[in-house]
Image (tube, rainbow, N blue to C red; front, side):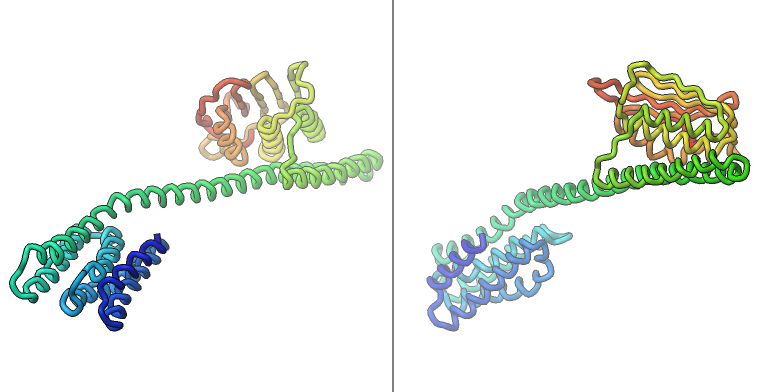
Length: 367
């Protein structure tokens, strides 16, 4: 639009200006219009609204009273500036539009009367056309402004969506990193404590525990690297065996029920829930018995040795983020205390079925 505005403005000035002084004054109005247009495209037109309106408003009476002839070059700048500024005002836009129209009409009437006896041609060229053109241009800018407002809101919504996506990805990464390192550090602590007790009684077993600790740290480093490069996938069978070994190493009797066709099934959510639940049982309970049951659509972990909070209700702790992720996938994660046992259960929608989101049940982090 800018080249078009410049071309029309220069053409009108060339038609109206009779001297270099006229061209300079009318050119100042054109410059004010172009400055307002440039700031409007940047969304900052109100910062230059006042000087641009003053300059373009001063050019209009100069063109009528001092230049005369074809006055289109005189009100062109004011019409452009007003149509850009008035719809952007925070309030009293209608009053401002009426005021601009009245000013254009008043100046045109002044020029009409200054020429002597008014004529119908003078009334049309000095009052009706300039006033109508200016008011019509301002009026047409209102729906145009509504369109650009919608476009701007859509752009802002896209930016917010992009920011939220980044935040969600960071939270997911932090949650996965917590699952990897928190789980490993606690297991390393248990194994080192066990090795300390065995170092004098059974050095060979203590050495084995230290080797397993070393291997576990190396495995954790590899998992962290896979997580950083987006290659991490938890193997549910491996997580079940890992949980069994950890519970047995801690002196907890464990029973695992799993379908025979589980195979090398990779399921991130179930694997993460099992890993987090295992860590919670080891850290926050005095369990002696743990039952892990894997079904076609989920996983259940039940343990005894519950340590209740002050209000007797469990706290989700690390499972809270997993509960939200399960819910986002259309599943449900619940944690509850019943008959002195802590039960963590997760159900996921069957593959190929439309997931119906459901909220997580009453939360709990560890039995």
